[in-house]
Length: 250
Ligand SMILES: *Cc1c(COP(=O)(O)O)cnc(C)c1O
Image: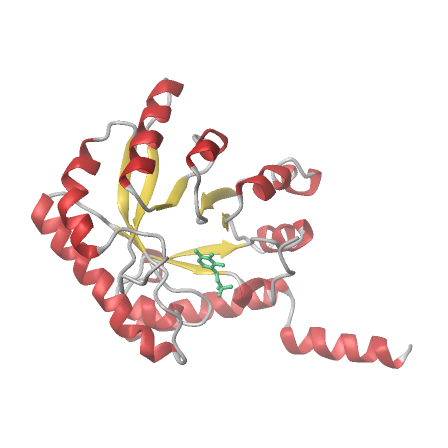
C-alpha cells in the first residue's frame, strides 16, 4: 500500500462513514432532546444532500435515513432519475433552496415540503399551480423568515409576515406547516441561540394572532442543531455533519 492510501484511510476513519456520522448525529439529537425534556421523536432529521454524490445518499438511505433536502431544482431533477436513487425505497424530498417561479412545476407534488416560500408572489403562484394540477392535496410549505432582516437575504421579515399571514393562510393550494429560517452565521453555536429563540417566539405569536397551528419549526444546521433543538426546533437540516464537506457546485 502506498503512503497516499494510508493517509486516505486515516482521513476516512477520522471522519467516519456516512452511516457512522448519521448515527452520531442521531445520538446528539437524542441527547439535546433529553436536556430539555423533549421526545426525540418530535425532531425530524433532514439530511441535506445538495451536491453530494448519489452513493452517499444511498448510504444514508441504507442506514435508515428517509428524509432528504435539496437546494437546486435542476440538479435534483437529474438526481431523482439516477438509477442508484431510483432504486431506493421509502425516501422523500424537501426543497430547501431559492425557488424561482418558473421552476415550481418541477416540484409540485413531487417534494413533500417546499421549505423556502419567501415571498407572497411565490406563495400565490404555488397555490394557483397546485390547484391547476387538480386532484392532488395542497402542497405543504414552510414560510422562510429573514429574522435578522439581513439585506439581500430571502425571507419574510417578522413584521411583514405578521401583516401577510392572514392572506397566505387563505391560499387554497398550499398548506402552511410552519416557519423556517437560516440565521446569520455565528462564530459558535451558542451565539445562534437567540436567533432560534426569536423564530420560536415569532411562531408562537403568529399562532396566537391567527388562531392557527404552525407546528413545524425548521431551524438548525450542522453547526448549531443542538442549540436549535433546545429552543424548540422540530426539524434540523444537517448536511456536512452527515455527508462531510460538499463538493463545489459545478
Ligand atoms: C446547505 C444547507 C443546509 C445544511 O448546511 P450544513 O451546514 O452543511 O449542515 C441547511 N439548510 C439549508 C437551507 C441549506 O442550504
